[in-house]
Amino acid sequence: MTLRHFLADDDLSPAEQEAVLDRALALKADPFSDRCLAGPQVVAVLFDKPTLRTLVSFATGIAHLGGQPLVVDGNLAQVGVRESIADVTRVLTRQAAAIVWRTFGQDRIVEMARYATVPVVNALTDDYHPCQVLADLLTIREHKGTLAGRTLAYLGDGANNMAHSYLLGGALAGMHVRVGTPAGYQPRSDILARAAAIAAGTGGSVEVTDDPVAAVTGADAVATDTWVSMGQEAESGARRGGGSPFAPYAVTPDLMASAPSAVFLHCLPAYRGSEVDAAVIDGPQSVVWDEAENRLHAQKAVLSFLLDRSGTRP
Ligand code: NVA
Image (cartoon, rainbow, N blue to C red; front, side):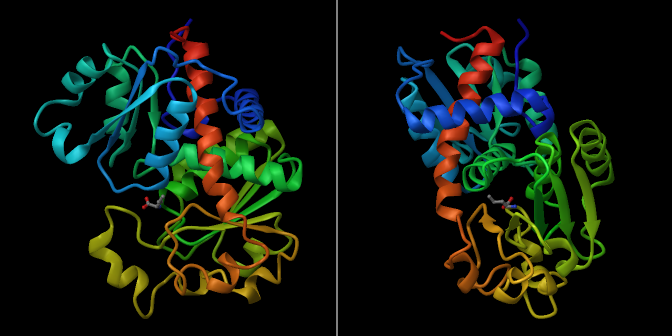
């Protein structure tokens, strides 16, 4: 058995992603059917950035699985400042059954995984938000029945963690992923290339355009995200203020009229009047509360899957 982590979306193969989504649906139907953390075993959940959904859904999910969440505030631990990532990991890995971390650079969580002897899960980095995209895929599957061949359009900051994870996660699921974003905010080219290579094997596709209408036309799901990600607060004037380069990509009722059968997704927190109009996020196409709940089911499935595949299920 090899130790398995979930640091980026494509740490799962297409078949594994499907198996995790199947497991998530089974757990949603029967929430206490998997007691892989019985003991209770502890799962360390560390936050270097703000949180609501991630904290709630991991704490709830770990409890459902029979375990105990150990929430570590990054301000107290100061990982990489007070002591090295390696030393923090060496302490956590001897006591926790898994480690979940929300942090800044992807290099930080990759470094943690190097020293961990238990699964490490990415709860958002600057580059990826893979748990969120699993929840989004689960939500689309619930509302549309299938993923492969469906079109997922994302509008907004094409260079942020959600854009990157939609590209990779959507490609793994065999979806057609369209990113509508202005020049200067395009997805990272290596991630786009990885997503294209994955899509070539799954029957999906990836496309980046600066035309918001072209991006959403006929889509099965339309998603957006804040224009100011955590860590970018100093740029918020330029990103969200008057003359924002993202303004044409705001998800309005007019834009949604080009995707009449689409569900609307947002990872939240949402800024009504910026990236999305209230009439959309609070309107009939919105499934954002299902999406937020599905974090719970998707993450329980990921934890259970990683413990099984790593041979570290207590
Ligand atoms: N792109 C956003 C996602 C929040 C869940 C951020 O990183 O702040």
